[in-house]
Each structure stands twice: as C-alpha cells, then as structure tokens.
Length: 341
Picture 1: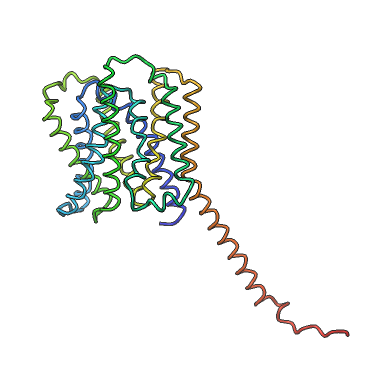
Picture 2: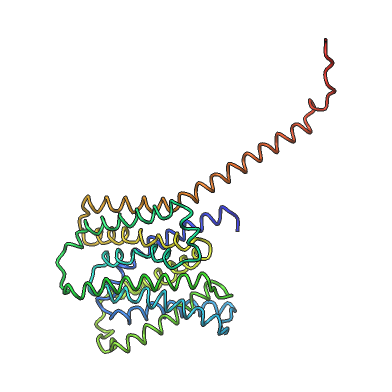
C-alpha cells in the first residue's frame, strides 16, 4: 500500500469511528424504545455477523479454524458484548450524551493496561499531555452539559450504578481491543469481524435469556424509529465503523485509536441538538474545544516526525543532486586554471 493511499484510508477510518460511533449512542436510545438492551445488542451483532460471513463464504473464504474462532470469540465478547452491550443497558438510565462521556475514559484505560507500551507512551510528552487535557475538557463538558442538569425519571442510585457499569464497559472494550491487537487471527480482517460479531450476538442473546428480556417485548409493538435505530447499528455501527476500528488497531497505536472516545460525545451532543433543538451553552463549547485540542496534541509528535522525515528526504535529494552535478557537470571536467603569478 503506497503512502498516499494509506493516509487517505487512515483518515476515512478515523472519520468513521469518530462520527458513526458518536451517532450510535443516539441510535441505541432509539432502539431501546422498542427493544430490551441485550436483545437489541444481540440482533445488532448477529445480523451484521451473518451478513458478513455469508458474503465471505460465497466468495470462497473458509471459517473452520478453531483457533481463529477462539481468538475472535474472546475479542467479540470483550469488545462487543461487554464493551457495547453494557452501554445499551446503561442508556436505560442515563442520556446518550452522558453515556458517551462516561466511557470516554478509554484512552486512560488503554495507557494503564497496555504496560508493554508504557515506555513509548511516556517518552512522548505530548501524548499524556493531550490525554490529560482531553480529560479536563470532558469534565468541563460534563459540568456544563444541559443534559447533566436535567431532571431524570431514574433514581439517583440506579444512575450511579449505570455510570459504574459504563466505566466497566470501557474497561472491557480496552481489554478486548488490546487482546485483538496482540492476538490477531491469521485470516482476513472481514472474517475476523464476522466471527466476532456472531459470537458477540449469541452471547448477548444468552444474557437476554438469563435476564428474561425475551418475555418483556413484542416485535409487533416495536415502533418504526426503533427499527431504524437497529438498522443503523447493524450496517454502520457494527460493520463500517467496527471494520475501521479493527483495521486502525492493526496499523496505529491503541491509545491513539482510542481518542474516538473524546470525539464521540461531541457528535452525540450535536446530533441530539439537531434532533431535539437542545441548546449548547458556552461552558459546553469550551469543553468541546479543549477536547479537540487534546486529541490534536496526541498526534503532534507523529506529524512532526513525519515532517522531519520529509525534510530529511528532501535534503538528501538536494545533496544527491548536487553531488551528481559536481561529478558530471562539464565545468568540473576542465583542467585547473594556471596561476598568473
């Protein structure tokens, strides 16, 4: 893959996880109007996984390797069933924006758990500075959020439990992401994702059965906007964005990829404002700007290094050209001038 194509693919993949996953918090809230949380997650993952694997099997790919299924099962249950399924449960008691903010501790869990790369993270001062700045922006954002100050129908205790569960979902997501990065299955990325989605969907359905969710709803009573939310989650949240995420994990540092948790709340709140016309106050806007600054700082050294590499290559090219000029230019082939003195 050439450098330009890689650059564009990376930009598209980051856009997918930044924007689409921000919108999924809204889509989950729509889906929860008609589906219990783990039924919703199970349908989302299993349908997406079956669509992908059917396409891949039709193309002739094989999916019989038990080791690959085991690796993808662990990743799928940690990242999807735990990391995303618990978000659905939490959004029963907190708003979509609050949920997106609550799991934005992801970059810190990445750094805390990914001990193998501690030296790399802390040798680059801009990464921890950017992460800390982003986290301070999140606190300011939360403090200024009009959603946070709204009265809730849920009791204070269940809301506290919901935020704890959301924090656990973030940890589960990080553990699964690091496992995926360090224990990748030896098959195509699409097949890995299909297997992860299928296992995650089955696991979510088992949890739904344990919680008696199947008896709590009727398909005939699911409203249209819940079906639309589910369709968005299946095709965009579980295929397009998740594919982008798994690919980015294979080519970028995990802490850098995890910065999507800083951008997702911005997208969630803006989408909520467009849908419900909810005002965004100056304190919120200040928090959003600080978050964006923190994300940019986590990339600063990488861009400087890239710029330095380009400058070094340019200087080497100039030097090589000058050397060729000295060797082959006709003026350097003339005999030395005779001194007049």
